[in-house]
Length: 151
Image (cartoon, rainbow, N blue to C red; front, side, top):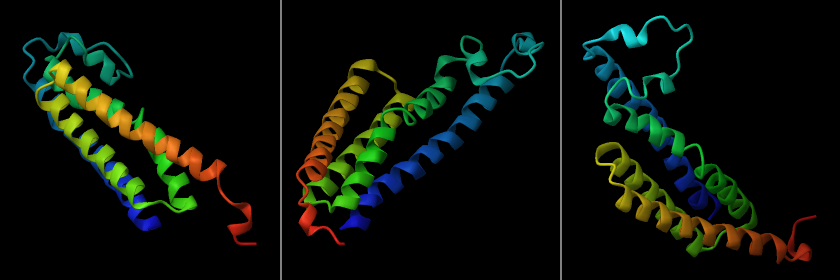
């Protein structure tokens, strides 16, 4: 069952990389269409944040989502590893897939539509799934029977 518990985390890693690649055409395409490129000149070592307010907001949405995929999901990765080590149950695997599916839908919504009420709802439901997983990880570790562990 350990491999099944790790699979959702692996899928979320791949999804994060897909969103990273999504940033390239979104931002470069927007920069190429800029009529006044003077806003981008004169800065050495410019960062993605320097494009805020310069290119259309929608062109920055993939980057915003990519940042989000490096925030709360880090807790998901740790929780998945704890559960994989402790021996996950079927409910743990199911909750991990629910979390990943909701995060992917959240990404697509933020990148393509970005209406806040729906986005917040997706975030809230995925957070509840993560909270349940985290509590189950705590229970799996605190209530573990040390005599059942290999010597």
